Image (cartoon, rainbow, N blue to C red):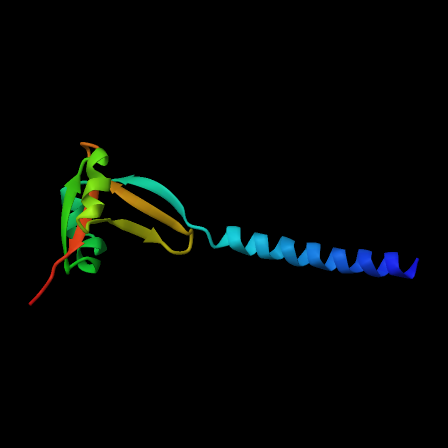
Length: 104
């Protein structure tokens, strides 16, 4: 009987640890959403300052994978407290992408 109680206590402790590890992982996951913007917003936003060393441009959604192979990356605006990354979309449904400018 004592062995059963010991094993049950041990398994209960492992289950509790597993529960909190899983809860912590989900808490730190970022959610991805889309945000509609225009060129005027882009010129006055913090994104322009954050990505000052990047060549920013708009790309059609179907060409993003091809552009990633050339070194481009999708530009996200991050909301740290809510853990949301906003993918920036214009009125033509194009996605904002950028590539780091190589300086000599």
